Length: 274
Length: 340
Ligand SMILES: Nc1ncnc2c1ncn2[C@@H]1O[C@H](COP(=O)(O)OP(=O)(O)O)[C@@H](O)[C@H]1O
Ligand SMILES: [Mg+2]
Image 1 (cartoon, each protein chain N blue to C red):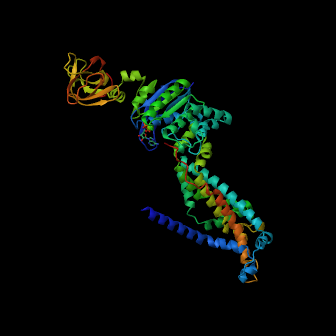
Image 2 (cartoon, rainbow over the protein chains, first blue to last red):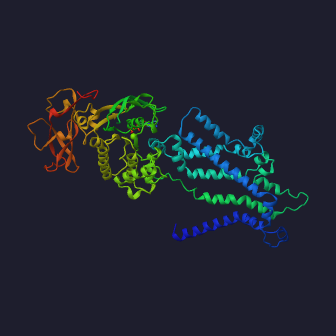
């Protein structure tokens, strides 16, 4: 390819990327813009800037509390889910033990079970344990991610075993090998898995809906859904209010993504062996 | 104190054939032992058994007088240098070197001082803050050495630590390792497939073949009295010449054996000498520095000899005579290859 051609190709790629970005971002930006309008101005087609929608969402509809609940639940699910998945992945990747293959097969098999099938058994179990309407009830069913364990195990298998061995020779116990060698090297995989777990839990709707009836424990998604039914008698939905609530729902995730994005870089195994 | 004894070590990998067939080895405190043998003969396996990285189910490993079979590697207090270095990619050079001390709860100040000291002797000071990915092969090798040296141990295992280096660096590091051995007075078990390395480094050499220990002795003893034909041909360059005694002109020694003649014991003549000699035609010459290797065709096969550069050298194609000393010849059984 000549220089000129490749320069033109670059322009084309940049242009297409920009276009895609606009297409994906416009509804988000539009809803954020809408959340700052009074509903009168919105329905009249005018422009009238206000913060009132946020005041209502937080003051009248308790969204600050829902936000806190979502942060607590998704945060703990992510931390615990990652810890368990990492330890399981290390065990499956590095140790031979009786029933190991069978257990790994079982972990993989859970990937094929739709979450809706486990809904009722989980509900019955937690009901019997008296954990409905509690943070524990929201968190416990989500902390064992078969996919995370599988994904991290594959990643760890790609790390040269000689690094583990070097650490053992340096005096490390298996848990030191995991936390001081394997985990730091797996950082990109762990962060991207963590992001996935966090977003999945953040967007989880069905389980909180089933497990929680106490409104103080509602997560953002439940709160959001209930906004649609606030004024059942009237035939208009207060869209600017819904958009303010939606913005409260998505902003933390965007923020979180920006924070961890730099950790999602390519692997750092380079230079380990040879 | 750090002595290592191996008693009748046998090892097979899961679903694999047996790779070690009963190896006995007694390594004394402060001794530099080189395990040498062709690729795949089980050297690394033996080293990893000593390290505890492979399970030893058959035979006994005794370290410092205590059975160590069941001891996990982290409890053996042995430092190891891996062939591919295995540096921690997420740690700086300093952290790599100090990690072993950190794991043993040496305070930060002490361990960093120790790591800096080791880095200084290995000329790594300018690179202390770099990650292994930003180092050259030779620098990585030195970090691997440093990681082992910083440890508070007197037993070192090295698995072909020099094989990834270029020639000049290899020679420097060889001297370096020898110096370290003298300074630390450490017990070193060094694996290589390179016989030159073995001869130049070892207090004693263990020669292996196909999972069997062939001979365990000083370099001089192994060179001068190889126990069998394999050991004789494996150590020494150029290789020892072999011919059946019946095919050697003027042979007056024992008959019906395989005769081994080291190239450096053959004396070159341009005219037929009075003493017993083998007639040969020079096929090519090979300069190695101060010496020239002569490759010849004789009636008992291809042979090589060594000439000094001061000598007037024949040209390829010339007829020459190689005078041998029957008393300096090595004799091996025709069938078993054992020394007779
Ligand atoms: N982890 C393993 N699993 C199965 N076979 C192995 C393993 N490691 C080495 N081997 C085999 O054992 C034999 C000896 O290997 P090794 O000890 O690495 O030899 P060397 O270091 O002398 O080259 C070889 O035939 C090799 O293929
Ligand atoms: Mg090897």
